[in-house]
Length: 150
Image 1 (tube, rainbow, N blue to C red):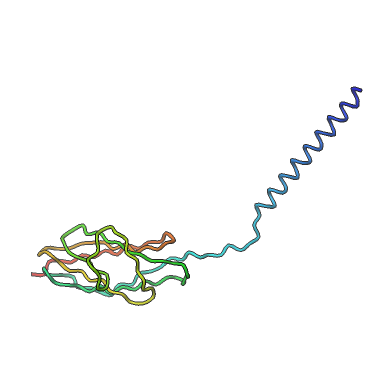
Image 2 (cartoon, rainbow, N blue to C red):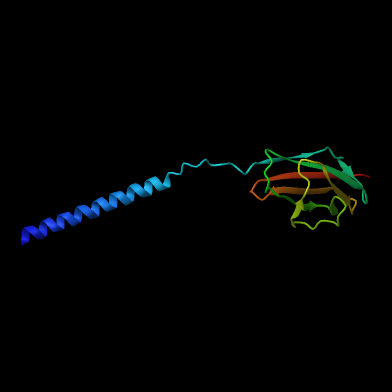
């Protein structure tokens, strides 16, 4: 009976080893995904028309912008936020109310020009950054600096 137990043990051991090898092979085959990886996240550029180098208190500067995606993606959404770190002024998107610093604002015009308006509220130099970003993690920073116009 001792010999039969050894054979039975060996048989069970071989069945377990074969099962483990089969599971390993199946997991390797399952991890090999033959589907094509389709890129649906593309970077973008921001075109800004030239702006004046100086501004007076109460003066408005028009900033003409255009977002140019590398490729149009149906579910892409674009946003902007700004932060003024020197001077005091107001930034408006198209004809909206003044934007609040560090709040996100959706940009609905892609591949067509939209306008921002910066209004100086003091007689001093002005400096601010506008961050453009999308829902895919891409972002662009555009910096503006205006000297005081006497």
